[in-house]
Image 1 (spheres, rainbow, N blue to C red):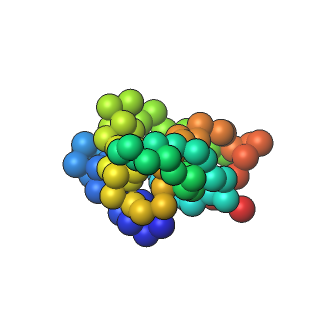
Image 2 (cartoon, rainbow, N blue to C red):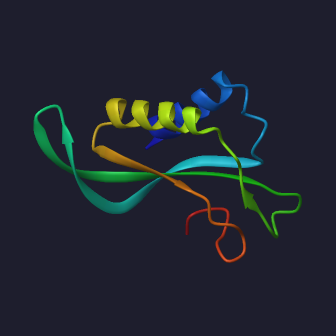
Length: 102
């Protein structure tokens, strides 16, 4: 899990976006998914990526991370983090959601 978060932070920094969101992180979900890695079928976990912008943390909106950056993050996480075969970008606002996964 720490590896996925490190990759997310590193790629946002590489793109000059690390100051854009007020809070961002990668979260391991309890959802497992069928996938294919190489020629093998997998049944691994999904990672949710979250980035929000807020003034007061009472309300928040999803950060507009460029799609090419998200694609690079996804590719690295799936190829470098063992046990993960899917990534999601969470665009839920607060409310109704919360900033953190609880």
